[in-house]
Length: 337
Image (cartoon, rainbow, N blue to C red; front, side, top):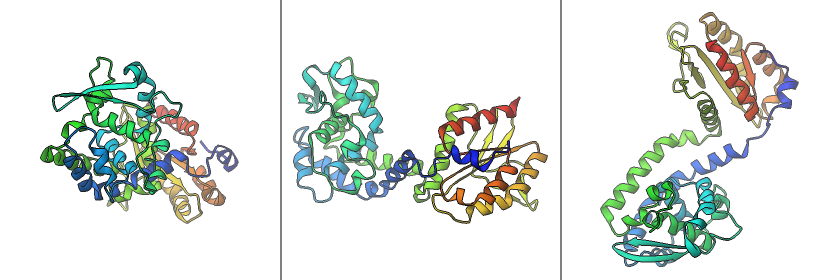
């Protein structure tokens, strides 16, 4: 499927899409969360006199800002900005007069939301918990207070209409004052979070781009396997197995290697991939497999000669646009025909 450089460039993004840049900013906050987890635990542990005592303790903290405290809760509860925006639409139908009645430590309490019926949504940007927001310390605001109390006590609310996500995940308030249980929960959760972010190497935009592609293709091709980096019996010098950025395995056992390169500034990576392109395609095609490339970024399009070589010796070449990744998924489906 040879495509001209002009055709590719017309369908290219050229610069990192915001969703990938935001993933990088968010993943880079994980070390800061882990670094401040003991302060977070201490705050909730001492704020046990009444459910809203966390406000007073937070106000006296020099380590935890209001937005960082909220980010801890969001990560621990696995509640992100998209869910919060959905909750803001649903909850006015659940809480009469925007007031949440809940039971904490056997006593009834109520909290009246200040921003639930307002026009401003509960997005990561407004909550100051996105990558750029967390670069600064923000004091407690009405919107941060509302979402904090929802995550702490939403699952304890007295209502039959509470969304399942809130009922199951917004129960951290139950752990206030229970030091051992709280510490175990937080530590275990951050071990899990560290694993899914893949440590420091996953913070690079290149690896996040690969992750985005895998997630995109996995959603389109749920029966396919994208968990490996190598293809059986494909090796270098008949000894060392060749590794690819992504390997797609079809339900019928057909393979396609996928190489990803997104370079905003020019460098030699694309030249290396171009130099390998012919031999890799020959080796894979002879074994009955295919190879595809996802190439994007302004820097890569400055290397037109390398791009032409890759296009010539690829079975499919696309850019990073969703419509182009859709084209790749359609190509993969032909492997089993």
